Length: 365
Image (cartoon, rainbow, N blue to C red; front, top):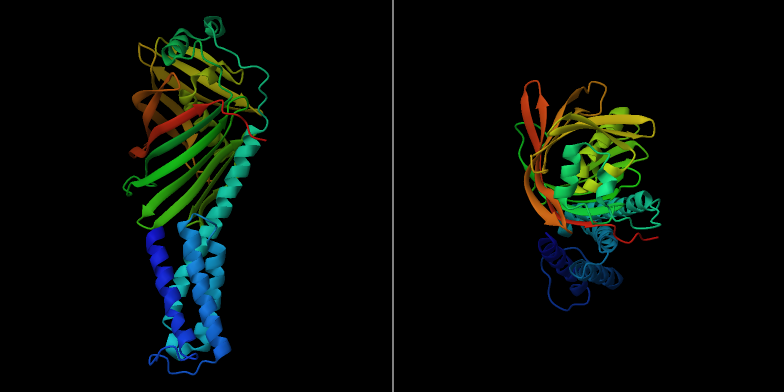
């Protein structure tokens, strides 16, 4: 994408040299029938230079889009003044403006997410790094104790923060196309909170960016097409709040020591299943964790709102572990399959893989 766009910017920029060359009689430019003054020719040269500076900033991973917007604006003014000769350059300028504005808005989105990550992590207080011992899990149901032991939690530090990376595929309707995505996520485990940021490949060259978060018991969901058009923008919504809290509860399978926190209570169902209840900010959600006989997490089942509008109803939301891997000495389900069990049939909408995970990273100010 960057290479193709750099080539477009370069060619478009060099074409502007024609408007410089004609008034200074550097070469004969028969394609330009309108007269161009020397001062105007210098502006054509400046426009070319701005496009080439944009290319340099783009290939050196600098903030290039401001320069691109300025270059395209000046170029378009020149084209309007010399419309008969240069009008077809407007098509390229429109493309440059759209791509650059999309990059600008994506940059602002990313900065917003950085601030939100700081917000959820700044409340973490690390007075001491508790090492989990067998006595710390004795109050838990037997199968949860086995999960703690099998996961490798015993002898490791209790987790207060999590950073992870994901890849996977998702779709928005049962017969929809699968879309690959990449994501990063931060968790505050002392106070249940997370920020999840993703980039989704809708079609070649067209992306959606998205962010889910849970802070102070409130969920928010924001998805934008090309960084510009809001596809989903939900907040201050009790159904979104419930869904975000259910999601957090399910995702403790990636940091099992969270089971020791007081905001989660556990109730025995049978030898392989327990009901977990997350209570925070006067809100409660529940789900059923199932485990293998050896203590591996197998699945999580909960009733979750399917959407956030007024017609949304609670449906069965099912998370299934596909495979396991060791991360930082802890055995986790690295691949999972997420399915809505709807009245009309199962809708597997998400397949996700953890590619990296870090616990208790230093908290930046």
